[in-house]
Length: 337
Image 1 (spheres, rainbow, N blue to C red):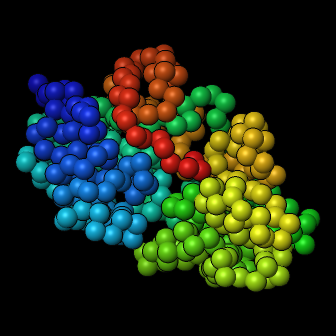
Image 2 (image 1 turned 90 degrees about the vertical axis):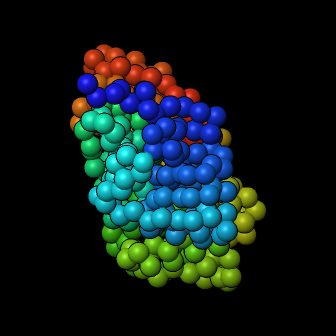
């Protein structure tokens, strides 16, 4: 009988550890061998000795961390199989951001899949999530409450263009996480026909350049930090949520503060942040999608890394699926979800 994944995949102070393979997944502190699901800071930590991930994830890590991105790096393409001490490892798309991957591990006839963060909506900037049947599925639960049902992203982005048409004398500045959300927002606007230059905060520009190097065309992008104030009248500017809430945005021309996040479903969140135009655009699965994914992977047991673990585990029980909260430290700390 194949061994249950709980006998070879365990939680440690450094994160989730595959014992026979001798590697960690998204380790929270520096470890000898780490597989990284994606390059957001709460999953990709600096200081690991050997790092494995998609070529895109490794490129983002190098751009952000420099020498801290790993003493050695090994790229693994989606669908490519690698043997690590008898554990067969494959990466499958997670649909979260450029390079994001699920880690599929097979050992002695049992299979576990670690999703990392994922979404189930169409996104032209990264490959879509691929469900993989398994014995244990390890999932996030960022938006694991029934209130979180994300509307169509194009409809939310259209609100922005409607506002630009209504207030052509004002600058619309969008708070969007630098990796993934900003590029998806740009792609949505291009899809809706916005062909004018989009102005970017300095933290976002180099990541958009990386997207371009991997074949994702985002159109004309210009740095907002050096643009003349007059040239930003009627323009769209994108910056990290922290910058948008700071004096950086206040120098713009009568700015309309916008925010693209799943948390904008909660009106109080938008009100507290002084957001004039909230857009419910998330790079995480919503409540119906988390449950649909649980059905699709056909795992009799699902482990939850972070988020609203109790609510999801309760719903899984009603579906006849065993749930377990891992309480992994450090996950879910990113902005602009």
